[in-house]
Length: 301
Image 1 (tube, rainbow, N blue to C red):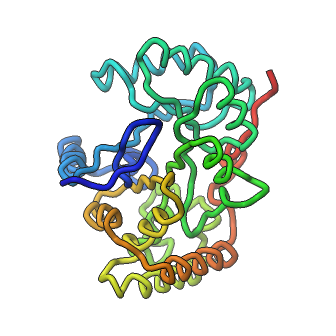
Image 2: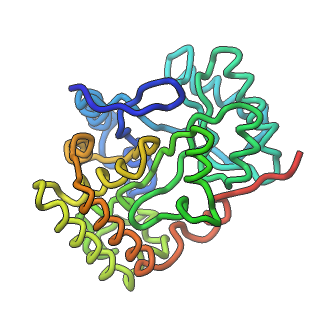
Image 3: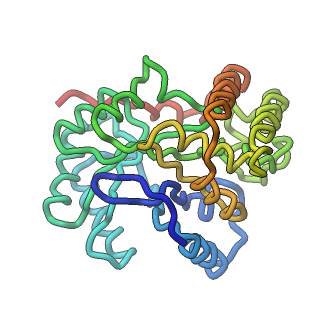
């Protein structure tokens, strides 16, 4: 199947990617075998989606030597000569970004990496990094529950548009809550990190379910579930926005968003829902300790 594409650097990638974290860590116990999880990836490939996001998630470190060593290990694990997009997934607040990106730029010059990406950095850090070497993508949480990058005081969405940086939106379905599958925090498995997220507290769930119902109502005209409608709305926020939902069960619904054309009044209605959701579904999007490393700055060089 051929899916619509968007640009990361000069490369065409499927407009919706696949975030692979959910088949390995974070959302409760992994009960599927490697064979079963590989079948999920086979299905992703067969759907036409060849834009996959993975990470080793070892540490938050911007040490230049670590950056190079981690790249070598990734190349070996993947069995490739070049990584298409190499991310620093969180900024190391003890190392100037210029040093980290300088090491990543060396990997580009050596042909081991094609493009460089950052995740959850501040606008200032993004601009400093981009001055060292072009940043092709910024990975950041972006959904009807989390509109932070649009805020003027954060400035990331506007900076990405100015600099030509793709916005890779992780957790575009509110960490699965916008599928409608979860009716209460008790539906999260034991060990699921969402139990620690203030935004997903029991007190917030009535408002969360209200948002799901409102999005579902907009999608009914297209016969689309809330997940498909949400992803189509994110795609409508700009041609540099590339959502990367992860899933074990909703692949076809996610990919269907690539071809769902929302009417202008529907996009506006969903915008109103999202802005109200951000007010009503209160609390941080990460638990203690993890909020301190989003939109992070690094020391001056």
